[in-house]
Length: 407
Image: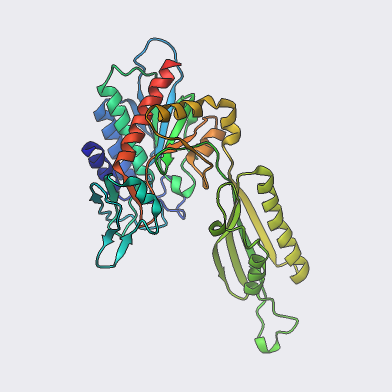
C-alpha cells in the first residue's frame, strides 16, 4: 500500500485548481505541472502511445497481450481540483489503523473530522486514512482516480500473465468546472466503452446522473429619489427577491435526495437599477427537467406582467442523464458489477447527484459509467480517502480488464 500512498501524495501536493472565470484550456497554467508529470510517469511504467495535446489532454495505451479480438476499453480521470476550496500547499496526514474516533485535523484551529457528523468514517475502522491538515482540500477528487488507473496499468505491465485486451487511459483538465470532456477526442481515444474512476465510497457504480442546466436572471430597475418614488421607482433588488420567493421552497439541495430534483440559487447581487440571480436546475427525469425550465420562464413572464418588461432570463443546458446512452449497452455495467462482486465488494448502484465527464462522453459516443475512487467529503477541508479503498479500486480496474478479455 505504501506505493499507492506515495504516488497519491505526489499528485495531491501539486496544486491543480481549475478556474471557472478563465476561457483558456486548461483554465489554469498550474494544471500543466501535474499533466507533464503524468506523461513522464506513464512512459516510465511502460505505457505506449503516450500523448498530450495543446490543451493538456493525456492519452496512453496498454497493448493487448492476447491473440483474439476483444473490445478496447478505457479508464478516465481528471487531474484538476475544485475551485470551491483552496488546494495550495496541501499537507496530507496519514492515520494508520483508524480507531473510529475523532481525528484532529488542525489542533490550533480546533478543526475535527468526527464520525458523529461524518458517519461514513465508521466504515473504515482499521483502515489507513489520508486526510487534510484542515487548511486545504485533499484532492482525492480525482487524483485518487488517477492514482488507481496508473497503479493498475503498472500492475498489468508487471504481471503479463494477467490476460487483457487493448486498454486506453485518459486524463483530463477542468472537469470541476464542467469542461472536462469539451475537448476530449473520442475518435482518437478509440475505445468501445470506458469507465470514469471518479466516484466516492467503495462499491459505488453509477450510470445515471442529473439532467442539468444553468440560468441567469437579469433584472433592470429605475432609481428615483425615495421621497418622490411612488409610481416611478423600480427596485431590481425587490423583484429579484420576488423571483426567488416563487421557486418551490422544498425543492432545494438541502431538502432533496436520491432522484429528487432541485433549483439551487448560488449567486445573487444587486442594486436598485440592476440585479442578477444565478441558479442551476437539476433533475434525473427529463420530463420534470423540462418542466423546471418552463417554470422559470413562467415566473419571468409573470413578473414582467406585474412590473413591466424588466426581467430577462437566459437558460443554458449543461449536460444530460447518461442513463439513456448506457442502458442499450448495459453489459458494460454488468462487467463492472461482476468485477466488484468477484472481489467481495458490494456494488452500490445509485444515481449521481451531480455530473461527470462520463455523462458528456456518453453523449459524444463513448459510453462511460462511473466507478468509485474511494474519497469522501470532496471539495473541502474534511476530505479524506481510505488507502484500502484505493487499492480495491485498482483491483476492480484489473479485474474489469480480465473479464473483458474473457468475453
